[in-house]
Amino acid sequence: MRQINKDVRVVEVGPRDGFQNVKVFIPTEKKIEMIETVIDAGVKEMEITSFVSPKAIPQMADAKEVVGTIKARQHKDLFLTALVPNLFGARVALEMKMDAINFVISVSESHNKENVRHTIDESFAELERIVNEYSNVQGAPHLILSLPTTFGCPFEGPQPVSKVINMVRRGMDLGIRRFIFSDTIGVANPLQVESFFEEIFATLPSGLELGLHLHDTRGMALANAFAALSFPINSLESSFGGFGGCPFAPGAAGNVATEDLVNMLENLGVPTGIDIKKLVKAALELAKFAPDALNSHMTRVLTGKAAPCGL
Ligand code: COA
Ligand code: ZN
Image (cartoon, rainbow, N blue to C red; front, side):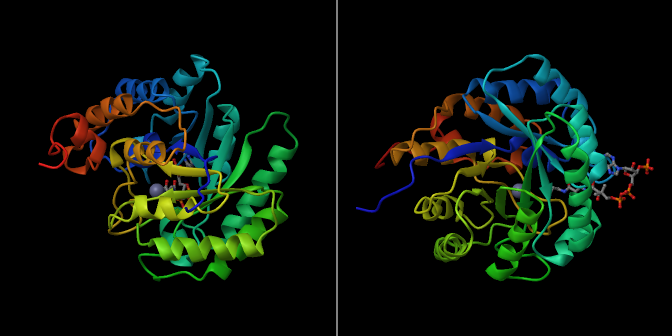
């Protein structure tokens, strides 16, 4: 039988990827309530927000308040990260004592330009400034390099793996050890994921921490997660309720739902420590703000909207 990696962590990105795509402003206290429900469900790592321009992403205008409230509650064993596009955001992350920042640089030049208004080289220069600034501060956030459009770009199409590897190497030269490969527009297929990781693990040195960020635009996200489990990756990223999407990537839709990913992992014998019912509670809450974007099999199952087995 096929051997799968049973040591993979589920990273919840709903409070960033999910919230950012909801058009109506979600009141701060509602955001906090949903985040608390997800923490209560047993999530141990969460991308809780992004420190970005409120003109670019109005939904994140209350990022500091959300983070400040959750951090003040001092949850045990909870690793909190925030997406950051520039030095400005990295300074806020430092001030908010984040455990880590996810610095984003898209693999495709045109998506990086749309998303953060920088060329890839400019983004790396900005990352270097952050590395230098953080290196003087004890307890500064860890650095994670997130690579949107790894598996395809809405403007440029498929991206060669060599380009991704080159970006990882540039990150490594700056001392970064953790990387997230993002299927921003949900175009990857399981065989592509398999050949991608074959090349990654054959080329890059061991000792890196690698994660996969999945969108379900074309219904392939769980299959892609399964394909990735053949490799010693460290994390899979998902969003409660299957909300999500990049406002700067036309056609991008929600992430794979965390409750669906957890359900699959548990069925495969991969322990997650996460309570699906509580995730569904948070998903139904978020659905009040974006009912059409709910994309969760387990929510349908647990609310009785899925047909009972076999009927
Ligand atoms: N957080 C908050 N405000 C920020 C900021 C940050 N990280 N970075 C810049 N700003 C503010 C500036 O202070 C400036 O404010 P002002 O107009 O009141 O003077 C304004 O935003 C414009 O600054 P500038 O440096 O010219 O940025 P820009 O307009 O070129 O936009 C980004 C660049 C990166 C700030 C913006 O594109 C962005 O936030 N993108 C985020 C994209 C994202 O989150 N995508 C989804 C996830 S992949
Ligand atoms: Zn995403």
